[in-house]
Image 1 (tube, rainbow, N blue to C red):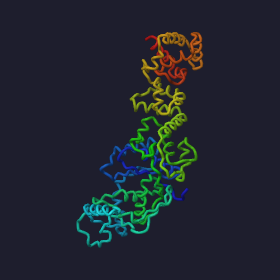
Image 2 (cartoon, rainbow, N blue to C red):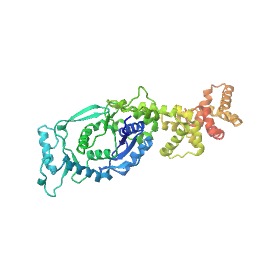
Image 3 (tube, helix red, strand yellow):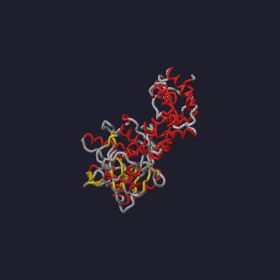
Image 4 (tube, rainbow, N blue to C red):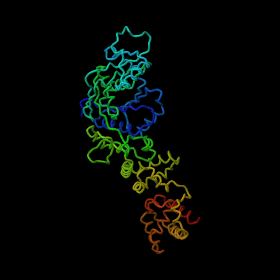
Length: 470
């Protein structure tokens, strides 16, 4: 563990939902900070006023809350720090590591067009880089550019990628302040990371070139860069960069599909990071084990089947009351159905059987239909075929016998139903399957005696009566 307290950050742009790649970046930063007993910060990079929206910020915060990625302190808004960014530029101007550039858009476009025609790099060599201050056109608009070194190389000792070197002649004099006085992304990130005390910048490897440019800004300010750790991107099952065509991208979509946040944390942690051969693990174990040395250099492939399987494992390991509450909340959000206190209790009681058969909360809700269904039940077509005239006659007789049962326990109910089947010289399935159809409206459910216990005497008998007295 470093002698300096670890500080990480997640810095999303509020231009849309929290997507899977961003969620994994947030998770890795969160895990690293929590592993080291450090600090995990959130910064909303909203300097792109045209594209940033309050709704997107709210969606990002909601996604992080659902994933359980709590951040320390208040979320920082980047746009509120523009004056601080501007002061940093003034410092660089005083140090001679930045300069005012009065080149017009037309001049820059023409220079780049010429470079393109001559098949040279398109970076712009400003004539104002070394121009005497007294030659500046009075009152003319200008940008402020970094006076980047022209020779040598900039080296990133990346905690994941290893040593990465960039020739300085490829890193042009990037703009720090636009002509309207607003800071660019490159400048704002450096100033904010420094002021927030960030020690480790963990992000996607599509930012690797940015790390070189930002290192130059740190040096221009006389500051020490943080430790960079650039993680490989997430690809789809076909090996292409994960996109909408591969399926759901937003974290909220996975919540709506019935995945548990702990399963998503587990699965996202395994996308690019490994701890031996461990696939299923708790969040507490992930915090204990996580380290940058476990991150690979190859892109990870998102596998929906593996996520679903892992989610099923987490459901079977989950507390029954927690699952019942999660299912009830999801049911209300998706179908507008609010469970009564009695139905919630019944759902919790039935959970051991329900969660063995489901891989998602949504599947569990479908299996639990019989608990919150109102009479008369909507009987599925396959189930309705089991309720033949002969089956209804037998169920009517059985219902009469069950009505006289004083001891409403699973073992007693099983004894009564088996005795009835033997008396009728029927296989147990010939009785149990029509019962299941009458009580749940489906052909599959938890054990029929568990269903009867969950529903209770009155509801069980009433549902049987609905089918036998119709």
